[in-house]
Image 1 (cartoon, rainbow, N blue to C red):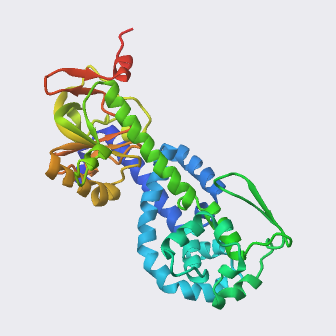
Image 2 (cartoon, helix red, strand yellow):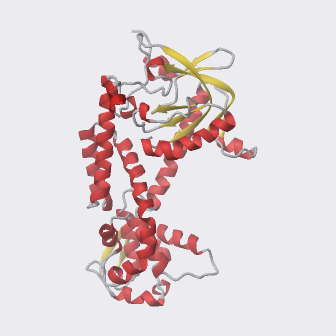
Image 3 (tube, helix red, strand yellow):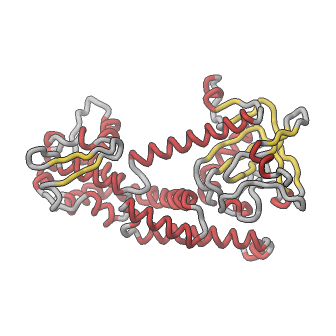
Length: 381
């Protein structure tokens, strides 16, 4: 809203413009399709270039793009399901590769590959079909190499060979080893093209799913280690689940603690107003800045960029459920977040922070604990 924008400081206006430019770039990339979303190297090059031009950290821009792209995926998922057989008959059976089909319909290659496998491959119905399909996407060379895996109605597709079929080299994305095959060591077209599609997908697929899981766990560990180093007692999500507690945040404090909030941020975030949610910059105290204390009962770790739509539709409802059960708390976006004035705060009960664990806590006893990073940043020369 114009009146809200006019009320912002110059730093906040710059931050808002930078966020809007990044969002516009993401939407344009998704709408245009092109090679960016269908080739890992092109994707990485474009991300690096856009990061510099927009002044937006690469990991934040990557997360931002994926958040917006997920809406594109969900919006078009039913269309893919309803048209899958048509696409197979008209394009795949006539020789179009899975990767090129994904480009044509502007949908993630890994997901198009899964849809093709669901229809073309024939699995033992006595087994868990969904699990077998997932395994086939993870390891197509092992699961899909035999011609007998192809359903009878689609075996004609194996006779349609593209230029790469007679002799090609595939690199396993997990082991890093090269898989050679020729007329003496045949694998199916389906296996080869599923591997090609998953390798070309820069946002989805087994490798990226595994990486995102590792990153999420890594940042949860960093959060736990930071709190332990500061001597702050807490319970983890795993400990809470063992006790049978449902809907658990990553960290629950046995007793509420307080964190220091810059007063100028109107108690919504511990991120500094000078674009900290968009820049890699440590939190440091300024002599001319007033602080207040805000009580929190829990922290939820999010290894992603907190854009407006993701925060409002996914993260905030979850956080409000924690508020109803445990009291006010804090959401930590490790890759930064949108301008704080655009993010809901659950009527003041949900704080938002970017990049790092709060560096100053107050225990119920009144003892103030500062992290080593805080102390190092505020050492007097």
